[in-house]
Structures are given as C-alpha cells and as structure tokens.
Amino acid sequence: MKLVVGLGNPGNQYNFTRHNVGFLALDFYFKVHKAAWGTKPRFGAISGRIGDVLFIKPQEFYNDSGKVVAEYMRYYKIPASDILVICDNFDLEFGKVRFRSSGAAGGNNGLKSVDEALGSSDYARIRVGTENDELRRKMGDVDFVLSKFTPEEKTKLPEILREISGKIDEFIS
Image 1 (cartoon, helix red, strand yellow):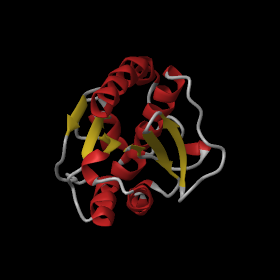
Image 2: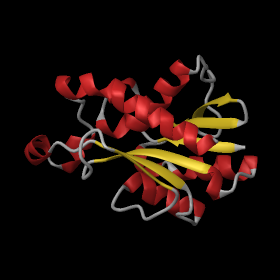
Image 3: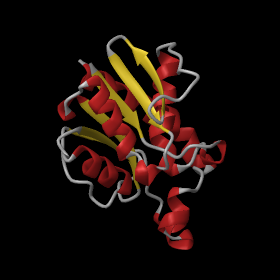
Image 4: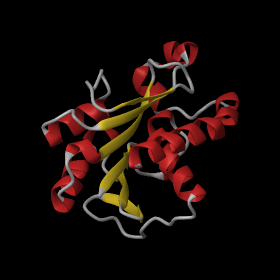
C-alpha cells in the first residue's frame, strides 16, 4: 500500500489558495480517475482509495499535518519510502512541478511537520511552484501563501494539475 498526501488547510475559505495546492491536486486526480472521497474524516483526514493507494487530505492546519500523516503510516504500516507528499513552494517558479524521492523541508513548515512526526525525511515529495514575487513583496509570506491564485494563474492550473497527476502515477507505479 502507498500513501499520497496533499497538504492544505481545512475550510472553504482556503479553496484555491497557494497553500492548498496539495488538496487541489488530489481533487483533480480523483476527478480524472472518477474516484470519490470518504464522507467522514478518519484519523484527522479526508481519505479515499484508488486500488491499493490511499490518498489523504489532512484536516489539521498545514503546519501541523505531520501528526495525521504519521497516524496513517502507523495504522497501515506504510514505510516512509511509500509516502508521497504534495505541497506548495513559493520560492519555486510558478507552475514548476518538482519531484524528489527524499530531501530536506527547505523552509516549508508542512514538510517540517511531516519530517518531525515521521522522524524521517525519506519520503517522496512534489513541490509545486507558486512564486509571484511582486504579490509576495506586497503581502508578506503568511498572507501570500494564504492568498488565492490570480485569474491569470488560475488559467494555468489545469495544465499544472495534469503534470502533478502524471507524477503521482509515476510514484504509484
């Protein structure tokens, strides 16, 4: 069994924000695969399955997502090497999708939380570039990651989400 985690913040007010690109990616993946999410949170996450792959959207806030990931890992006895985490990265060019089989958190508080909870950084991750330096300078980092995508950025999201879906498929196989 593999575990694919989309990082984000719970609540409709965070839909289409930069920090919720992990949730957005999994929702897109489920739509493409005609899969459905469970209706009740389990172990602090909305979850769904496609074959022997478990997908989760932690319902803790982004910076505290690690404890939910660790709970699923323990319960289902999933090794870190079979976990994929999808997150945003405001230092990465908008729309760039970068896959790594392991690595450092690099300042991403969601990944730091996962690292701490798992006691390891030996899990795969997809970082999705959300960079918009002009907007970030105006708002500051916290408001920027919680800001919605601009109309121009939204038009590029389907292409980005298709690329992420391909990376998920590569990880699964």
